[in-house]
Amino acid sequence: MRYNKNTILMVFIDFLIINFTAMLSIFLRFENISDPQFLRYLEVYKSTFLFISISKLLVLYFFGLYRSIWKYASVNEMLKIIAACLVANIASIAVLAFLQTSLPRSVYIMMIVFDTALIGGFRFSLRTVYERFNHRTSDDKKNITRVMIVGAGDAGAMILKEFKNHYSYKYKPVALVDDDKNKKGKLIYGVPVLGNREDIPRLVDKYNVDEIVIAMPSAPKAEVSKIVEIAKNTKARLKILPGMYELIDGVVSVSAIRDVQIEDLLGREEIKTDLSEISLYLREKTVLITGGGGSIGSELARQIAAQSPKRLIILDIYENNAYMLENELRKRYPNLDLIVYISSIRDENRLREILKREKVEVIFHAAAHKHVPLMEISPKEAIKNNVFGTVNLAKAAVENGVKKFVMISTDKAVNPTNIMGASKRVCELVIQAFNDRYDTEFVAVRFGNVLGSNGSVIPLFKKQIQEGGPVTVTHKDVVRYFMTIPEAVSLVIQAGAMAKGGEIFILDMGEPVKIIKLAEDLIKLSGFEPYTEIPIKITGLRPGEKLYEELILDEEGVTATKHQKIFVAKPTNIDYKEFENNLKELRKTMNDLSDDEIRSYVKRIVKTYRFEE
Image (cartoon, rainbow, N blue to C red; front, side, top):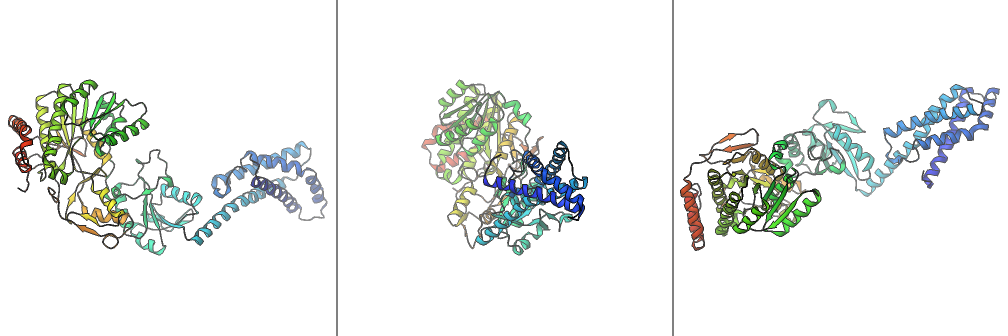
């Protein structure tokens, strides 16, 4: 026991309570101070009170009543007090028996009741005084946050309890909301359930709510999205308790609460992958990821590293991203055999050297120039890097016996209106051509925009909001498909497991999202009003952009796979001999061609490519 002033004071107060309850019990037993029996037992107690007091105090000590922080006392502490007082009085009976004396049995019973009431009451009064003092000082300073919790289930109750026990100096829960009609009017830790989700705007205004916490970790994302849609139109800040799959240890606590993100508004459910199937083609294999330092490549590296590959190889031309990823993976997976190469996929000899040296078995090809407007200005670079970089890697893969080659494609490859999309469509044809001729299984995975990736609209919007606007949108009707980076990558890996060779896998991207609505929502989630506090400016479509993207060509069609989020496009019929000759001619003459001639040449290969001449 730590002998500080507070502990000594607590022991002294307990000493007074113990003796007061004993005297009170004896008095109530006889009710007359002139009664000879009262005087007799009073003398018995006077001669033994020191032994009784010491025995009781020792029991209270062993039960930990002098180690608890009573301003955080809860039901567990109350149960501990009851048990301690019961055992303490049994100990006092034993002490009196040892001293060959005793008190009336009714006195013992009353002493147990009074000890529990006063010793427990004193300790819980400390919590009450602490809470009232902190509420008063916080209110005086006007720095307390009034909180509404959406979800009156187990998670909501746990968060509410933490707020009241540990964060009462800065948070004051004032209302609960739940769609269960049976809970309305009930109290949880003294906080009332006042309505359902539709009542949120009214209750925010009525109770001056500063912050809304959505505590529904087990609810479907579509339901959470609907609640966010309602809550984002109030003046309150929005917070959310992540879904259980995001809570690594499954522990629900205030520390897990985060800001509502744009992903929460999309209402996309967690993508589940067949890890046992994935592990079969990655475990104990040497895996190479090109563009490994980029947003898609780095997430591929994280998820593949978790599947215990024999060796993981990162290849990237940009050393800073590769270096940061290397440090992250070595810290997270200390036993991972990891090597990082700085190289360009344009360097055919370097690719051959790396694949031969490392005996690569599986390749994920994510390296590419992806920025549409920049590639419109430099179309030769799109062809050099995307098309012929892919050809270089495919050739090196075949020559060195790579078993599986998975290329990341894009929805912009479908009926492309820009050179970037057209170059990726050529890459898809390269993949199918190589698959038909060689033993390596070549496949492509096609999907739309990923939230938060390098060059994505979301980081741009956030930066513009931080700078006070305007947020720039190219067209009020432009729509795009969106998916989070982790779920896109998990589906890419899953598609690789299902691949037999030659497929173009298409990921189910859900419903398309209007970019202007995305901008409005992000402004609201940042605590501002769109158009008034943060303006939105329509800038017009940039070169090569279109209002909407497509995931399949008209002539392709799709067939389902065993994974509900992955489909396979039917292969298109092309003359591979003509295709190969066109590529050779393009590579030979490319440096002598103008930008428009490059586009015209690519259109000979990709018949669906449309551009303004």
